[in-house]
Length: 527
Image (tube, rainbow, N blue to C red; front, side, top):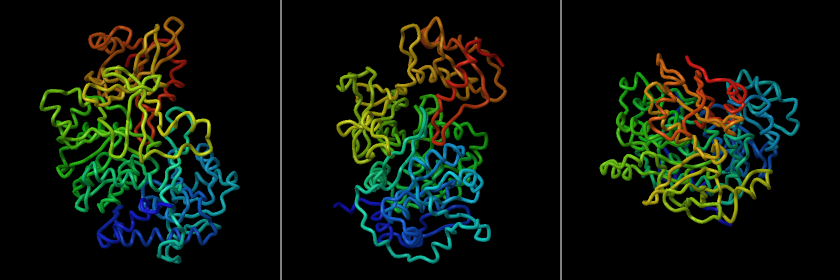
């Protein structure tokens, strides 16, 4: 039994090298690595003291906080399995995940107490409720998080932990339907921390910022990177562009992660010049296909400090990386197309684009990307059929359509399920969206296929305009006709106030399809 590559070992590294260094900062609270380790040990021992056995699941419902960061270590290092809940979900959606995971205990921040109380009568399988908030407000029958920590041993829990032990169920964003619980092991998390340190050259002089939700890989990977490297983590309860800039300025943040749309919001923010952001040196981003227009604008504003990654919940983070030096070299040679790439295989991962016969594609040919390596999860919790379909022969097949260039760089074309067949022609929405982003009036854009009697599917563009922009459906269509083939030009255009996004920054196209399936039977609108 291998016991080295675990979350427990990650804590031990910092107790050896950086015990008094600040590990976490959240508002006016902060803890050293020594205090962080002791707190996680105490909570782990407290959970075991409730009678929980190895392998039982413990859920956490909270915004980003010190407590939610601690949960990535306290729960798995006690041999239990973390289920970090998406706090943005509605009560019925939370209930479905809790029932699927069959959790034995749940920790709830006071902000979400009402949501939990609304479904508590259906949680007959939950034996213990733990409250995170003011001690005087603890509900009757609940235990208080801090009291549990204060009253339990701060020594390492007396439970054997192995690399292959299940550490967490990470539920997918649900961009194509119901979330699935990805079974992440201790080895997966240890790999993320180690490999990011290798790729980003993270060390104890770095300061990371956790701006993405910790219930998603985009938040978790920053925590693992910082913990493995002994870097301080600044925890943001939620994303807010100006607060992000304030934190970068105040704490001299060097590294962190943004979802692709967050990069757009940051770059376009009217107060971006009010803060000193010069400390940023390795800000990685992922979550949606990047448009070269956004990437180029970010580099022009902040410098070559943004590292484009591609990954999934099923890989607990990164599968590919476009390194800073690769961007610099390509731009120096005038190869701006590199800004549309997500790079090549990440450390200790292998990513290959294959055709329908599972053979590597030739340059320029679109295929499906498959991934294997130390980050690949065991499969989906309670879903054998879907596990068998997506995880085959040691590879994870992501349903993401990609192409490679002659240098081996990978470009995400679109999701397999998002491809539109119109009049017998295959159209990849991301290509059309990239064109739309070049229009000066477009802030955000999404392209979907809607039912059409003549064409089978009609390309339908849903657009968020820039403030005070005046643009019509015909303006958009005319612009596209100059840039792409006629069959790729949206037949219908709708203008909206916002697009539905997951917490990880992914566009929820299934919601747009549901919303516009009937609306698109008429004409698009002009505003």
